[in-house]
Image 1 (cartoon, rainbow, N blue to C red):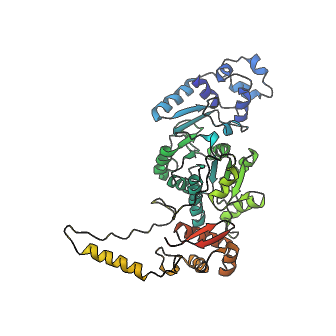
Image 2: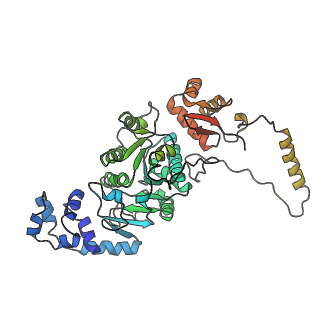
Image 3: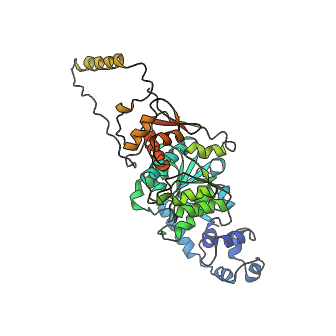
Length: 418
C-alpha cells in the first residue's frame, strides 16, 4: 500500500541504507509495518534506535503527504515500481519514494549524464555548461542536474534549447521553486522532462538536503560532468559519489590560475576523463546505446535563450514595405545583386574583420590566427601567447557566435561562409 511506502521512506531514525536493507528482509513496507519485535530481531545488523523508530505506526503524516501530492499534482514512484530507474535502484542508499512533476524519461535505455558545477561560475564556466548541455541533448543524451544557480541552470537551459529531455533533481519538495528566479526554468523542465525529489511536498531547501540529493543525480547517471568547481564545492561531492557508485567522472579543464577551477582541475589530476564537448562524453556510451546516440554537429551557432549568459545581438530591423510601393523591392534586389557580383570567390572562410558580433581582444587574436586555415589548439596557444584557460574561454565564445568550429584531433578552424 502506498501509505506504507511513504511511512517507511520518511521514518526518522532510519538511514537510507537501513531502509533498503529492511526491504531485502520483508516483502514490502506493509509487512514491515505489521512486523513484531521477534520478526525485527531476525534482521541482521539492525540498530536498536532503528528498531525503536519502526514502532511508531502513525500513518497520519503519510496521509498528509498523499493529500499534498494530490493538491500539487505530484506523481509518486516507489522503489518496486517498474518505472523506477534500475541505475538508481542499484546504489547502496536508494530513495524508497520519489515525487515528480512532468514525464519520466526512459532512464534504463538512455545515456543519462549529470552536469554539475559551482553556483558562482565564471563566464567561461557558464557558457561551457550551456554548450555542454545543448550538445549532450542534441546527440541523444538525457541531461540531469540540480537546478541550482550557475552551472546547473545553464546546463539545463542548453539541453532545453536542443529540445532534449531533462531531469531536475531538487534539494527541496518537487512543488517548491528554488531559487525563485528559476520559476520559468522549472516550468520548461516540467514540460520537457521532469522535476524529481525524494523530499515530501512543501519541504524547504536546507544545507543537509543538497548533499543528500547529490547521490540521486549521480545514481541516475551513466556519468557525471563537472564543468567548474572550486576547492570546496557541492559538485565535488557529486563527483565522489559517482565514483563510489561506479559511474564515470568527467571534468572540463579550466584556468589553473582561477580558484573556481581548483576542484575540477584536481579531478583531472585524480583520474577524471577530460572533455571539451558533449560528444566527448557520449562517445563513451555509443556501444551501449547505438540506436540512441549520434554525433550531431550543429549547422550554425547554438541558439541561446533570452536570459543567456551573453547579451544577444538585436536583429537588424527589416526594411519597411509600404502598401502600394513599387520602388523598394527593385532597389533591394539591386543591392543584393551588387553584393553577389562584388563578392570575392576566394573568401571561403569568415572574414574576421567583417563579423557582426563584437569580439574581445582574446577572441580577435584567436580568430586572426585561424585566418589561414585550421590549426592545432596547442599551436594557437603558442602563437597567441594566451593561457589555456583564456584560450578555451575565447574558443567557446567564438563557437557560440558562429565564427569558429572545433574539429577532431583537437583542431579548430573558422567556419566557412554559407
